Length: 317
Image 1 (tube, rainbow, N blue to C red):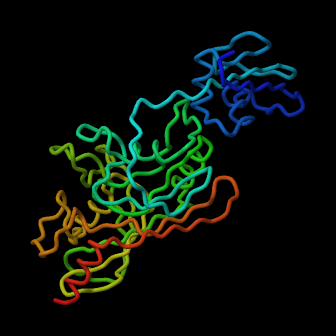
Image 2: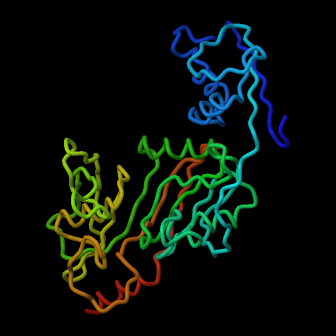
Image 3: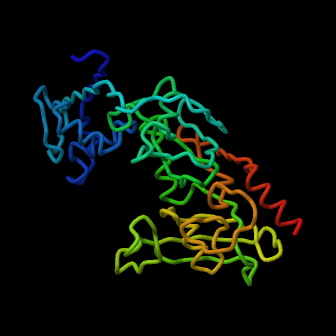
């Protein structure tokens, strides 16, 4: 057996077998018995020959298990991620062995991309975390959701495969809540509202997103907004996401005629004399349940100095 690998041995109890044949599939049954592993991870282990049924290697995920079957699952040691760990300072809002919530600064890219190979959040996390359990068999941080390069604020990262599944499920089921503060041009006519417009890739500029009908490839996108403060011809808004599409708040704000101040992609508003690093949008509050304890965690990211300065300048006017 490989060094540092883990052996899991299971015997199928005939009294606890699911009555329907579909749920007796090897991959489904194992995912129910080993909740720390995602179903896709289990399917990969099966296809790579790490699972034995009655001492015989089984590479078929759809084979049925039967009462009395003896299963062996070998978990090979996580493979190191082929990225450099870089010591980049992180503003940690919450951390334990399961997850980490940090306050992302403007300018920090989340994932490595052309032009950003070794100066990303992932590089910083590899240096910060002494131990990362294998996520999908690779020793890496689990990015649960993303923030644009120049959007600041709270972002959660999973340290284990189980935590990643739990946090992603909370976002999908809308039990995790993400609230943003943003300064927009103009003043909406009502105190609050909802934008329900599908978002997809821009048909011409592929780096941008746009309002695209679902029948043409757009995906459902819902944003709730509420006025926090009217400041002349500008407004401080609170945005709450029900869905999490790329550039969602920026696209929806532009659609309603109140684009985010400083947004280089979706705003044509006049310069306001404040040196902003990008759009005036901040992921202010993140509320979720801890994957293990079920305890509610509320992380609030302090408003960055650039946004404070912008608000002070607008108020003086």
